Length: 415
Ligand SMILES: [Zn+2]
Image (cartoon, rainbow, N blue to C red; front, side):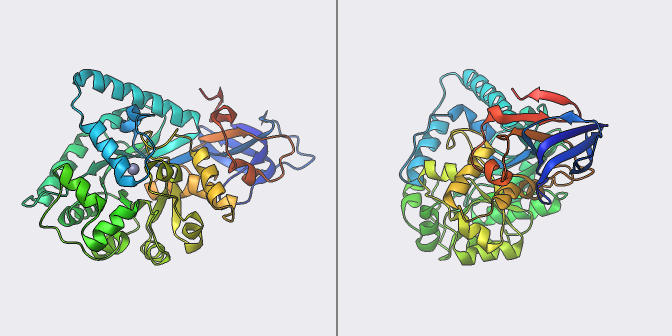
């Protein structure tokens, strides 16, 4: 049994504890509390740190890590999307070299996640490249095999999805890294494809599903009017479906009418969501995953963070990929949320970065808070001596150099 003493213990479920302690046995949390003045129980003194649960990055695309610093900030989302589509479609002169670059970038990205205090990821892939890397790493999480297809007029979507599920079942998934399906977005997945994906996910043991939803204005325009920059882009790349007719409703209503919104779903972005949309998500039990730095980079615009929290919808946090985010530091994402919505309680932001993501991904039995029985994948974050509002400090920007991992043993400074 190890006992750790710290200036602060931030359990997430419950108020921060000044002069706190956490005891750990064989990698699991046993108990926690506040040290009384006369408490002489021996323990490892961690000093001026906040001990807190490891973070959850609920939305990333590790396989795109090779595009770090390659995609310029854009003034509109479709302008950004054009860059990334062309970057990914460019025929590499040497496919093997690209594979090596992709693999090396995924390795570096996983190291960065761990250095930044992340233990659980929701990772989206269009190849299986990241799955094995995550499985071999300290990270836990869900690998989402993302399906895209809008212009598939005569396709048998059930057969396509069944085939994808078959591929997934060949991956050596474990309790630590689980697999599921994701639909890319309303503008890139045909309506019958959405229905087939939902049907397949509902048949799987309880795993989450994911979709990019209401990320950009052009998406809303396409669904409402059937035209706009998305149609132009889809035509240019040969992906436009001439048989498709616009539903005449926004993205949230569109997927709700298809029965796609439920408590298994992570709806990512929500930049264009109205209060009514957020209420729909709340009543369906959907978790909204926000990635504000990515939204700024892609030209999607800033998400209505204060509305997200006021609506009562569950909010988790993702960095999105290194093609649209400067790093994979969830603490930096949190500080962006704090700057965008100073009225939101720091405690709520910290919940989003931990327990909300863990719950949405199905990992809350082991992660997301400091509670007896959960894994002791804990962080010790340096805080200035005499810090009085530790939650405010933690949401104001933590850099990797301040983060150490406390596990069953004292493992020292990360990285
Ligand atoms: Zn994404």
